[in-house]
Length: 132
View 1 (cartoon, one colour):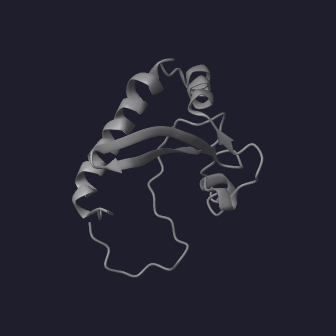
View 2 (spheres, rainbow, N blue to C red):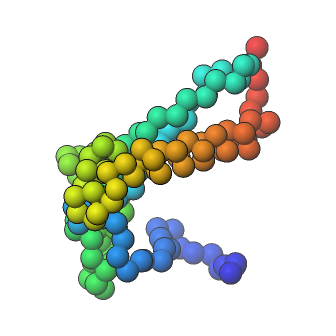
């Protein structure tokens, strides 16, 4: 489906799933990094980055849908404390609270993130400008 309508600024469109994996009851996302250290030869590094957690417990009732501290995980909309976590912290919580395999991040998430990073680098490398 292609939307041809102009949306007003500040609109977020996403489909909510019935039982998402939560970080101690909070919505979360995680960020990974790619560092391109050299283009000749290619030297590219991957780094796990961090996990961000929303400020309020996850709910989907009508009153909470407009609450950016429930549904947005970016730094701007959250408190400065108790917002950033490590991948190890997330793995521990997902194992304890949701029954995830204790090796899930090491064996599934990290390898997938590394493959995605590799794909993105190779897809974009022709567009990089070489500096002398």
